[in-house]
Image 1 (cartoon, rainbow, N blue to C red):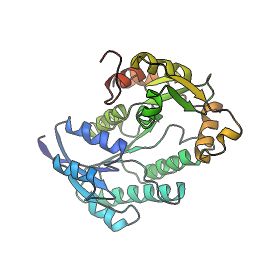
Image 2: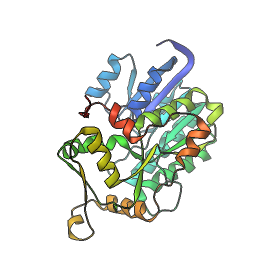
Image 3: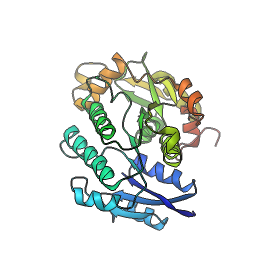
Length: 292
C-alpha cells in the first residue's frame, strides 16, 4: 500500500471487531499510514497487524499522556467506545479523553462510531453513554463524522454452534423486527468519511442494512444452511432470571421502539452498498452453506 504524507490515521480499538474491519478497509484504499492503538500492543492480534505492516502503538485510555503520544502527528482518527470495569461511566470518561487528546493534537477529522439510539432518551445506559461522548466530541470543535450502527450481523458468529444445532434463542418478541448491520459496512462508511471528510463533515447518521423478525431470520439460516433452524423465544419470567440486566433493558427498548433506521433513505443518500443478512451469511467465513 502506497503511503502519502498527511494521511496518518489513528485507529483506537484496532484489535476489536469494528477497528479490525476499518483497518482491512483502509488497506483497500491507497495512501494511508495506519497507526493501530491497542491496550495490549504485544498480543496475538497486535502481532498480526504488525506483520501486515501496520504501526501498532500501546495506549491506556485512562492515561492522557499515552493518548497524546499516539495522536502526535495524526491527521485522522477513528475510534469506538472502550468500556472499563465501571461500565458506562468509564466508557464516557475514556471517550471524552480520546476526543480531548485529538483536539490537543489538532487532528483534522474524527470518525466516532457509537450506537443507534444513543443520542435519544431511550432508557438504555449502555447506549446513552455513547450519546454523551457524541456531544462532547461536538463541543471540542473538531471536524467529525458520527456513525450510529445497529446490532452487528457478526454477533451471530458467537452463536454459530447453536444455530448449526438447529436453534436461535432470544428474548425478542417473535413479531418484532430487529435491524442489523455488517461491520464491513460500518468500515465502508468510516473510511469514506476519513478519505473524503468534506463530504461527511458534521454528519451524524444511523446505519442498518437489513431488518428481520427472529422467526424469519431462523428460516433464512435454515434455507442458507440446508438444515432445520428454529427460533426459541425465551418468555418473560423465570427463564430470563439468569440473563444480564443490560440485555433485558436493551430488549425492552427493542420491543418498545427499536432502532428505526430508514435503510432505503440511507442507501439512496450515500450510494454506499449495504449488506443484507442473506448476503452476509453467504460471504461470512465459517458458515457451511447448503450449496457449498
